[in-house]
Amino acid sequence: MAIAPAPHTTVPKPAASGHRDTGIDFVRALCVLGVVLLHAIMVGVTVADEAPLFQNASDGTGWIAPLSWLLQVMPLFFVIGGFSGMLAYRRQLLRGSSARDFIAGRVHRLLRPALVTVAAVGLALALLTLSGVPAELIEVAGFRYGQPLWFLAVFLLCQALLPAFVALHDRAPLRTIGALAAAAVAVDVLRAVTGQEALGFLNLAFVWLALQQLGFFLADGRIDALTRRTRIVASVAAVLLLVALFLTGVYSPDLIANINPPTAALLLVGVGHTALLSLHRDRLARLSRRTPVVAFTAFVTRRTMTIYLWHMPVLLAMAGASAVFALTTGFALPALDSADWWAGRPLWLLSALALTAVVAVWADRFETHPAPVATGSRLRLTAAVIAGLLGVVLLLAVGTSVTTVVVAVALLAAATHLARRRVASPEVLRVA
Image (cartoon, rainbow, N blue to C red; front, side):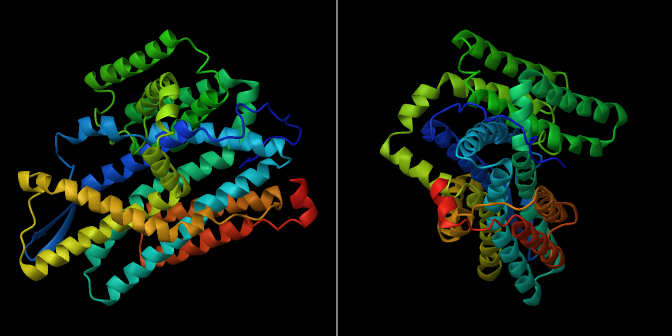
């Protein structure tokens, strides 16, 4: 796997100053909030035959499709990941760092908090097993925990490939994003023609890499340079084409369904979101400077991956506590999607946000701890990325259990060790 550009890649001109784009940071923080809220509202717990029952509260409902149009923010998150990653990479090149420095930093930023979270979940599953909790409930908990981890694997892959795709963007921007988008559409066509659903998982690469590539166009100013009318037309056209594809049955109107496996419909979502983001960047920049918004953005930006990794364990703990309370007190939990269930959603969502924030404050040290300076060989760094991917994919493909957690923790630890960067001498630090 090539994870760095050719040695003679020229240093591109920076697309922006060294200052952070607070408007973009604010939007990314809103995306994280949207993910937590979406997953929180999908957690359902009831008691049947004196046993807890954990379900996806959105299954078979009519409200998930329109809600997904509001809270399906993953395409925009990857666009922003491309925007921020490209600018960060270019700043590092200008300071004399290399592609390997960038990738090693991303490995540490993503996998170090994951290592802690996965180990904590494994310990919790072991304690539940020892306390006599039925194996099927532990299996459900492990499955629910592992579902959102696809993002960690895909984002790690996209960020590891970012230097190579930035080089492609500099040489042939339209051909590169066009090839990725065409490949995503081709995968959808093959999946539909052959009926082989597994083919759709190829788009875990093509769809998300294309959206990251779209972020490069935002970072280098190409999108903002388009006329306002062009951006409005692009946004409206993307939405209208989405609606047409939904009405003709090509894609599901539920945008959550279009993420597992991902479909090219998400590319249209990304185009619409990116055009709107570009149209309102000045307004967002002004809003992002207000004191409450500054505090919210700073809190989430510092802990983005920590919040993502811990929000599902928090939700599972809340569901388990609800079940235990109902079983021990005889309190009747409301039926999913009932009026009483909806009446309790505001308190449930606020509790999920508050508890996730508390846990994130404790755990953010693993995400924000700085990595040392100089990298090892390209082969060693490639092995680090592969080990990290294998650790996460294991939990996704086989399931999260005590056994798989032990193996995954070993792989994640190996990844962070292989990407470990030796501390530079004081002279090197002063030059950097």
